[in-house]
Image 1 (cartoon, helix red, strand yellow):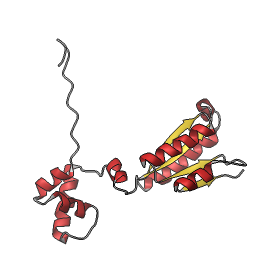
Image 2 (tube, helix red, strand yellow):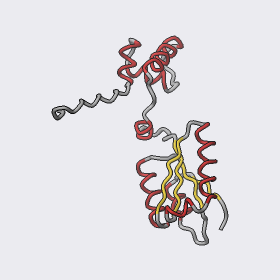
Image 3 (cartoon, helix red, strand yellow):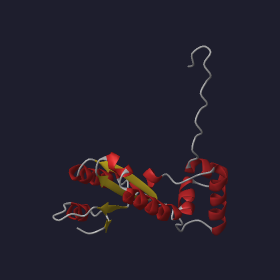
Image 4 (cartoon, helix red, strand yellow):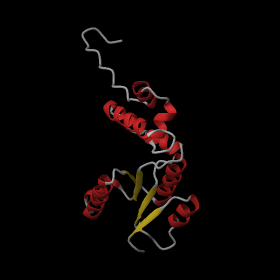
Length: 166
């Protein structure tokens, strides 16, 4: 409900679903899923029709749903454990993030980036991302002597690339 003299807000556009694609393509939802995920069980013509309808509707895979189904999240994580105000002073990290983003975006992989205050918070964040299946792996910076992160990431089974040396 809007107040007098206030314009009504437009309703946000609804994202197309697999159900929408199935209805328009005249196939079952499972056929849509098979077609969009390159699984056997649908004909070449059906696969092409489903993909054409999905494109017409502007459908995009839901990364959260894919992660829940065990598929890739399509994102890598990067955590910097340092005061946020130092990022503007240390141009190395801005250049690093820029370079990482350039490579990942060309491959349609998202970068989940967060700045935290300390190593304990960084480790807690890795645990949360792993539990939520938010990232497919992480980039670890500032390795240290007796660093707890490699052991934690190994225990979680979360792939990691360490940038730099202690």
